[in-house]
Image 1: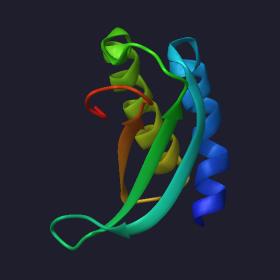
Image 2 (image 1 turned 45 degrees about the vertical axis):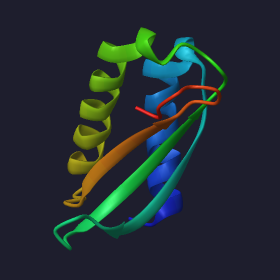
Image 3 (image 1 turned 180 degrees about the vertical axis):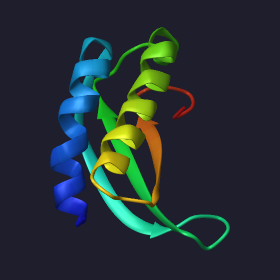
Length: 91
């Protein structure tokens, strides 16, 4: 799958799971992980919010993304990063 196809697939998943916590949009970039294996890097962008409020929702979103990609034959691992303005750390 292309990065754009993956973005169109994962944005609704992120919106469903993380919209109530300030999710706005996603970026997808293909690359290689720390072991050199092919990977998918998803960057979820948020409105300013308290990053601690969405813990379980983030886990469920990550699982839903991995499941959706796997169902479409994608075998690269998706890494999900949360970018929250004004947060001390991007969890």
